[in-house]
Image 1 (spheres, rainbow, N blue to C red):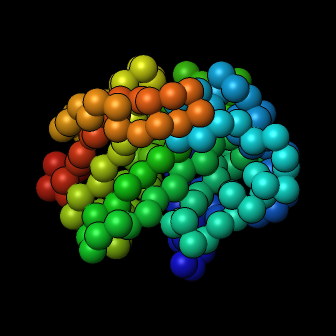
Image 2: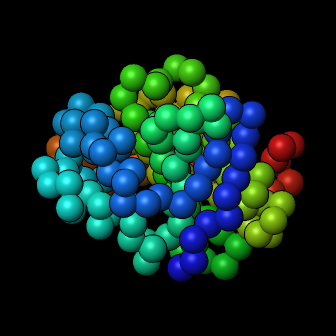
Length: 173
């Protein structure tokens, strides 16, 4: 896949990840608590994390960098399992929670996917114990569409999954 289009918000420039971003994201991806609801356990090797962050075959990824300077604070990504359907995911660097960063950056990506790329449906798969993520999606206008029991086995065992969906005509952005 090609690098994503650069997106801008009031506070952030969202650009393709580069190898130098690994250090900024290490605190998120190497922390057991932060990775608890991820589909895999924390990384123990920075080279492996670099390969993961820069893997274009897995979809497109953006990192949010403050427009006034500094290291990346948020990563969001999308993949398209079917035509005009996009799955999204995201992670914030510890210490930046509760500042509206995820909402601001995801809104820009969602608008881009719907308005510029012609995506019809966006969905997200969330562990029901990840209350902040579920709340974020609901605040962005997503609908919780399903609760799958023991949907996947991860590093913490069998996990349920909530599926959230948003259709193009439901997005006011």
